[in-house]
Every structure is written in structure tokens, then in C-alpha cells.
Picture 1: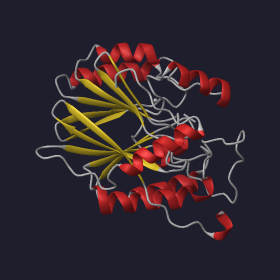
Picture 2 (picture 1 turned 180 degrees about the vertical axis):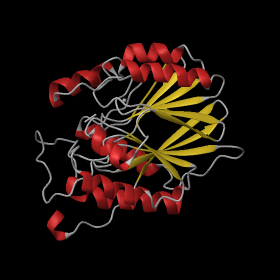
Picture 3 (picture 1 turned 30 degrees about the vertical axis):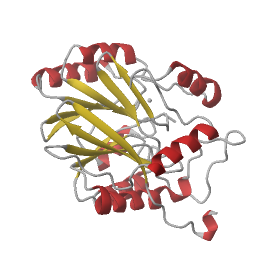
Length: 289
């Protein structure tokens, strides 16, 4: 598992999941691009690709966070097709847990084959299910790195061990200093902010810590560089939207969990708008039902 204004929507109970699905389906499946110079980014997270015959059982009756590992790769292929045919973004970012088992090199290579079919640039981030030595075989140079997309600066961070290590924090300070004055998006797997109740539920029900271990230190660092406007994360398998001291913290539901959603972001000047979009899925094969 893996987070505006002090309000979080978290898919941690079936009723909340139903509300989220209804809201998403009510939104346009093909969100119109805003007029003017707008950067469109798609955020996908928690693919959990695996070549398996059976899904893991629910942890309790009505568990809303059941990973559909059997269809993880078909789900990713359908997502790539939907992005190419309907969304047409400037870039796609994927915030971690590309595979379910870190040693599964074959599945990670298949993830890359799928992502290479995108008709735009894409940028992966390592998650805590991903193993560094395997991940780097498929995505070399994609641990701590940055890139430019339109007028925005993007920073990807390695928190594979549940925290940002001292060398990553040092690299981050240097990168933000070099990009000072450019509006910046930071991407990492574990969220830097999460509603307290959601955090408690994560620990008590799923036995996992949701936020980055050194989240407070990292948020303080980011605030010191006034250009950071947005932080994208995954890990909690839920949608959330918090704004803390001028920085917006967003997470997107896990792609591997129904209703299989992506987030479309429109970045225009100081304005950030976002829409959650369900991806139409192929029919289940009889053996998958």
C-alpha cells in the first residue's frame, strides 16, 4: 500500500470507494484541455505488475484495496491505450511500485515495453516494492533525477527504503537551488502529507506507515525553496488532496486496484487543476472471474 485545504479523500472503506467512483464517472472521460499555454500531465501510480495466476485474498471482508495482480499488465496496456487515444498529455509520471515483487525482472521489462508505447515522454519513480538493482537494469539513471517540461521543473526522488537518505536530500537541495525561480513539481512514492485519520487507519488495518519517515524534514526543505508548488505521491492506494503552507500534496489511487484510475493535471501559470479519470478495462477472461 502505499496522500486542498486540509481535506483528504481516502479510499479506505467500501462506501468511500463508491463515492470516489461515482465522482470520477461523473467527470468527463476525456477532460478538455484549458485554453492558452497549459501543460497537461498524467499521474499514474502503483502498477504492481506481476505474472501470476491468482490474486491475493482480501485481508478482511469488504477489503477495498485488493490488488488485481492477475490483470495488472492488461490494466497497464489499457491505460496506455486510453492515454494515447483520449488524454494526449505532454508527459506521464509514474510514482512507484511498478512491480509487485522487486526481483521480478521479467514483469518490470514488460512494464517498460508497455510504457514505451506511450506517444509522449514518461518518467518513472522507484517505489518500495521495486528493488533498486533490478529497477536500474530497466530504468538506468532514474533514481534521483530532474527534467524540464514546458515552463515547469520536475524532480523525481528515490525513497525506496521508506525515507529520503542523506545523499538524496543533499542532491535535492542542489537541484532545487540550480532551478531556483522555476515552478517545480516533486515526485516520490511515499507521500509527504496524509490526513491523521488515514494514517491511523493505515497502521491499524493494513499494518503499514503511509507517509515518508522523514516527511516533516522534507516538507521544511521544500518550503525553503519557494518555487515548489506541487508534490505527487502514491503508496496509499487512495486519492488525497492537501495544501500545506502553499504546497499542494496529491496522491492518486493505485492503478492495480479497481476502479483503475489515473489523474490528469493541468498546469497553467499559478493554477493547478486536476481530474481523476477511470480507465475503461477490457473484459475479464473466464479464468480471471
